[in-house]
Image (tube, rainbow, N blue to C red; front, side, top):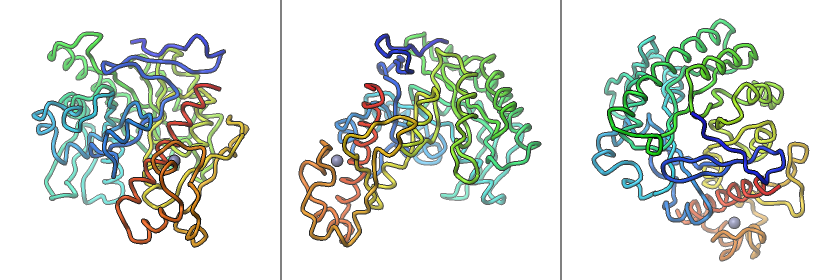
Length: 374
Ligand SMILES: [Zn+2]
């Protein structure tokens, strides 16, 4: 299942391309989160215009609402949300684990899968590895992620080892179900979706390695980084992330799920990770925090001082009739002033959230363009 190829002109740096059934994607790649089949506050047309190549939806959220049957009936995720480019679905393993971890009354995780009650209406559900794959096939996504057993970085060694064991067993069940679905739906190598395994193991290098090698034996198109890339104090786990990338074959896609801040993307890319997704650009945008380029700064893992964030709600921007970032080509920066945007936030106009989210997504798209060029 070889999919990732190094681009010839990339001079030894990890810059490449891989093919999905909805077209090829260049790496490094950042995918905005469209968790509930929408990038919050933005139309897919807006999101596409600023250079977004692929989106991430969430299996757990779409399973609960509106349900995969309805999306299938609509013609699949692309037709449903009017987005014709690649879509990746996260498995929902992390969301179910978080739900149960925060409130054990809402469910439990067994060897079979995760039993939980919906936070929407209290209805009971069972999400198994097989079910998670079937749902993703019904959604019609182009890249899928296995259902895993995530644990926080500060879990005990015993718990981490158990989670790796189960993640490997579930990964095998996901792969088997994936093969069954590909056959049943008569997909071939050009029309099948890509499948990603997820490496767990917390901060224990030997467990990360055991999990990665176990997944590679099962065989996936790409491998995801499960859990966090930082320790409990928020310090970047550089050595662990470097080692982990090196365990994954060169020609497989390395996907750092849920990452992250611009500097973390630069760091992880510099040690061999290709693909990223995160709610940060849109979530920060909705709060009026904007990413702004610093002029003429170098961008690499030793030079992370390439941007700043401004909070548009600050008083100082009341009479600032300049652009948020004169170097940015987004709608906000080419048409409106900081003073106007601040006013929109003050009166809670939904236009404020849209313009700010769009600007931040443009910043991330531009960051990928820069990383691919440098
Ligand atoms: Zn802008």
